[in-house]
Amino acid sequence: MVGYLLHVFQLFIFNILIFVALSNTTAAFFNDFLGEIGVSLESLQLFNVSALPAWLGLLIFFVVTDFVQWNTHRLLHRVDFLWNFHKVHHSVKEMGFAAHLRYHWMETVVYKSLLYIPVAIIGGFDVQHVVFVYFFTISVGHLNHANLGWDYGFLKYIFNNPKMHIWHHSKELPVRYGVNFGLTLSIWDYLFKTNYIPKNGRDIELGFSNDESFPQDFLRQEIYPINLKKE
Amino acid sequence: MENYLDIFINSYSEYWNYFLNLIYFREIENYFYGLIAISVIVWVLEILFPWRENQSIFRKDFWLDTFYMFFNFSFLIFSFL
Image 1 (cartoon, each protein chain N blue to C red):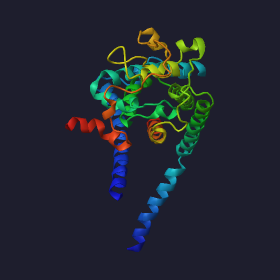
Image 2 (spheres, chains in turn red, yellow):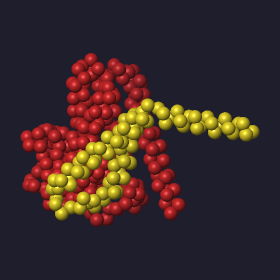
Image 3 (tube, chains in turn purple, red):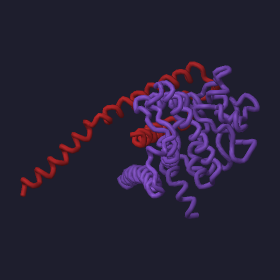
Image 4 (cartoon, rainbow over the protein chains, first blue to last red):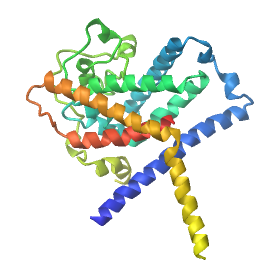
C-alpha cells in the first residue's frame, strides 16, 4: 500500500517537473531561436490586439487558438507516437461531462507548446479575457462529451456539439485517422471536409480497435506509451 | 545551533505563506469553483435529458474521469499562468 502511494506521489511530482521543464524549454527555445536569427518577439508580432476593441481581440484569440488546436488534434491522431498518448481519451466507452478531460497529461504539453508560437506572434492578449475564453471552451467541451442528443440547430455548422462529437469517438471509422476533429468550433471540419455524421449516433459503439487490451486504471494508462516501447 | 535551525525553518515557512498568498493562488481556487459549477450544470442536464436513457447517472468510469478532470485542469491552469 505504502509502495503504491509512493509510486503515485513520485509520478505526480515527476509529471509536474517534466511538464514545467518542457513548457519552459519550448518557450526558451523559441526565443533563443529568434535571437539567433536576429529578431525579437515584438518585431515578429503580426499585430498587437491591445490596440483593437476588447471583443475583437477576444474573438481573434478564440478563433486562432481553436484552429491551432484543431490541427494539433489531427496530429495526435496522425502520428503513431502521439496516438498512443491520445488513446486514453478514446478509451471512453460511455459519454459523460468528465470524459472531456480524460486524457494523458502529455497532451497538455503538446497542445500548449504548439499554441505558444501563434499566441506570441499575435501579442497583447489580456489575461482576464483569456480566462473568459477558457471557461467558454470548457463549457462547450463538457457538452460535447455529455450524454445529450443536442446539436444547437443551424449553429451546428459553427460549434461542435454532442451529436457530432460522438462520431469522433466511434469505434468504427470511415477513414483510418479519424473524423470530426473539432474542439469548440466545428467549422474547420466542414471547411476541410473531415466532417462525418452518417446517422444518429446515439447507439454506436465507442472506443478504438483493440481497446479491450487497453488498461483500465489511471496509473497503467499513464505508463502505457512507455511500456509499449519496451515491448 | 538551534538558532540556525529556527531561521532555516522560519524562512521556509514564511516563503510558503508568501507563496500561498500570491494573487494567482487565490484565483486558482476560483477557477476550480468555476470548473465544478460547469460540471454540475452539464451533469444535471444529462440527468434531465439523457440521450442514452439506459445509461447510469454514475456511468462507467465516472470517478476515474472525475479524477482526470481535476488532475488535468491543474495542468491547464499551471500552463496558463
